[in-house]
Image (cartoon, rainbow, N blue to C red; front, side, top):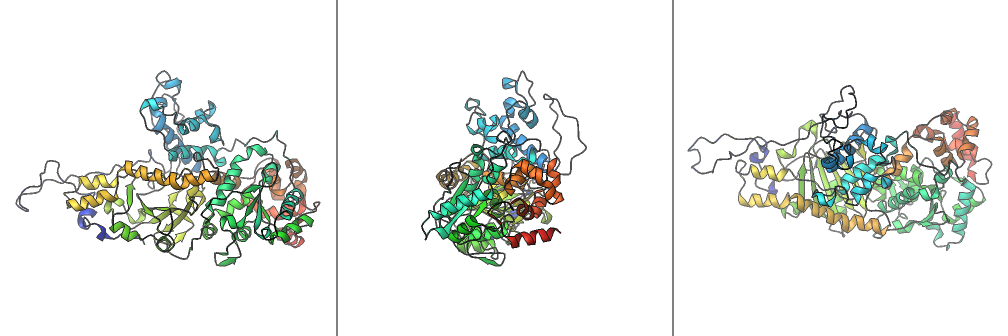
Length: 634
C-alpha cells in the first residue's frame, strides 16, 4: 500500500486528522496564556460534497425512482435522476451536465424561449439538440455544439465566461461518438453497397508490396488493413476515424522516441505497411508468462480473428515477412492490443512488479525525495467525475528521460478513507498513473490498494463499459483524449482556514502552499505538460488535438453488437452474399437477417464461417485450422 510519510510536514499528527472536526473561532485572536481561559467554541468548516443530482456516479447514489413524465422545456424542476446502473443514462447525464454548466446561463431550461439567446433554452436536453440538428449522432466532428465549443465560440468571448475545457468537450464528444448509446443510428454507407475486397485481393496486395522490399527489411514489415470496413459498405473517404485510430494505436503502443507513421500501399489508403522497428515492436516480450519473439506475434496470438492463410500469395507473403500472420485488420488488432496485460507488456511495464518499483526503477522518480524537497504539484478533490471517492493528483518529472508522470490516488470508501482526514499520510484505495512515453504519447497504469498493477478498477469508472469498470488502456485513452486533466484543489483552503486549530506554524503553512498549488498554477502546469508532450506527439502523427479519442471510438464500435454488414466485412464477402449463404453457416448467425448478434457470439463462429465462405478463393485458411474450427462447433 502506498503511504506518503508524515515526516514531509510537521503539521501532521492528531491536529491534521481532526481537520474536518475542528476549526478556530472567527473572533479568536489566539492571545492569552494557555489554559488561562476557556477556549472559544470550535466551528466546523464543512466539506461541500456533491449530491447524486450533481454526480450520479457517487458511490452512495441509489437507483432511480420510477420514471417521471418529461418536463416542459421551461420547467425549473430538476431533471429525473439517471439510473446508476445504466451506462447510457450516466454518459448522457454527464454530457448534459457539461453543456448546462458551460452554456446554461444563456441557453438553460430556467429561461423562457423569449429570454434565451436565439430562443434556445434546451442546452441540457440531448434529445432536442439532436432533433434541431445541433448534435449529429455518431459524428461529434460535425455536431454544432462541439464545433462551437472547440472553436471558443460558445460561450462567446464577449460573455466574459471561461472557455469550455478540452476535458469537458471530450465528455460530450465521447457520448456523441459511442455507437452503444445510439442503437437507432448507423454510420452512412456508400449507397448501401460495399466494394468487395476479398482475401485474394488482400493477400495479393501484401505479397506484391513485400516482393518490392529489400530482403533485409522484409522480415520486419507487417500490414494492417481497413478493407473489412470497405467491404462492409463504409466509404473509403469516410474511414478517417479508423485511419486516425490506427495511427494513434501504433504510437500509444510504441516505446520509440520518435512518432511513427503507417504507410498506405494502395491508392484508397485502406492497406497500410508498418516496420516493426519504427515502434520497437521487433523486441521479444512476455505476456502472462508466455514468451513471444516480437510484439506483432503477441498481438496475433491474442487476436481471435488472426488466422493463418495458405495459397500462392499468402505463402509468398508469409515467407518474405517470416510470420504466419503478415496482415491483420486494424479494428481486430486494436480490440486486444490496448487492453490489460498485453497492453502493459507492449509498453514495457512488468506487471509482476509493484507500481512504485516501476516509477522508481523504470522512470527514475524518487517520490519521497520529491515530497521532501517540495518538488511536487498536487491537488485534492471531492468532485472527480471518474471516481466514486475523494481523489489526490500529483505530478513528477521523469528523471531518466524527458517526460512527466501524473499519478492519482483514490480512496477506498469501504475503509472510510478521505483526503481530508490527512492530506499527507493517507492510504490510497487505488492508484492510477499517466506518464509520457518516449515519443510524447501517454501511457497508463492502474494499481490496487496493495500497489499491484491490475487491468481494471472498480473505483475508477468508465460509463462506456457495461460493468462501469475502467480498463487499461482504452478507458484511460478515452478520458484523456485531449491530454492531462486539471483538478481544482479543495484541500489547501480548508487546511489554511483551520491552521490555528490544527497547530500549523508559518513554515508548515509555506510547505502546504508549496505542494497544494492554486487552481491557476495547477491548470497552467497541466496545459504545459499536455502541449509540450502529448499534443506535440499528436501533431507529429498528423492527428487532431481536440475532439473524441479515435482509439476508444473504434474499440467501442467494433465491440458493439454485430450487424450483417459488419459480419460480412470481417468474413470478406459482401453483405448480400452473406445473407444468401447464412443457411450454410452456424445457425447462431441467422439472427443477422433481422437484427444484430453479440460480438462475442460472432467471434465464436468466426473461423468456421470464414472457412466455409473462403473455400472458393485461392487464398484461404489452412485446412487444419478449418478442421479444428468446424469440429469444435459439432
